[in-house]
Length: 299
Image (cartoon, rainbow, N blue to C red; front, top):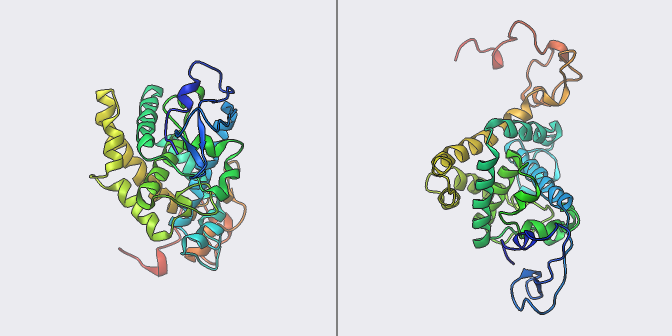
């Protein structure tokens, strides 16, 4: 399996060109550099397939993040080994709230995003992302191949339009691979296939000031100003996604009508927290606070 170089071969050709010089590593069941002139298996891909693969990786990763923060009775919670008999954060579509918030969190110039992604690609050359075989079809046609062979040139084909949420998904899955090595399971995101305690270790890796992954990405940012900003940017993103995974699950996002400023039904967060059990759903947005939890009058 390789982590870079494949998309770079397309720099002088169009995205649909077959990569005839790369062979299949029959032993590992992954693309490899062994005997590049033998066992040639061309791969035709398009920019749309690349976008689809990145978006589906992002969506699957964010579902797993929400299940980590607010477990429920969904497949992601059950697979991580921490679940409840009741609906959890995924039911509220907090993943959409998290993705939207992440994209707005730290506006990054296209040049900075390009350098960040190129640095991630350099890391991928050392420790490639491994998409579980059983879920390979979930990232679209050729998606598994593309995600396992990303390099810095893929931003050229996306015209610099790469969102913060995709960047976060790549970081989280790189950390998951670093924590657990080769990962198998029913989900395309390596992070989604981890147990709950392993997910804790992923965030520990991303939050640590001595994180090898964060330092490796920072070292490979060529622009000095961007390089100096990178540790803070990465730390802000990681802290944000942990907080918003919970906040998005308990807020009224999924049932709030911005035009009428009312909720269509009782928010799941109200049910889970037993907030104002007798209050009508339209109580949201009232001028007065209903009160502290369990009648507390001070903190």
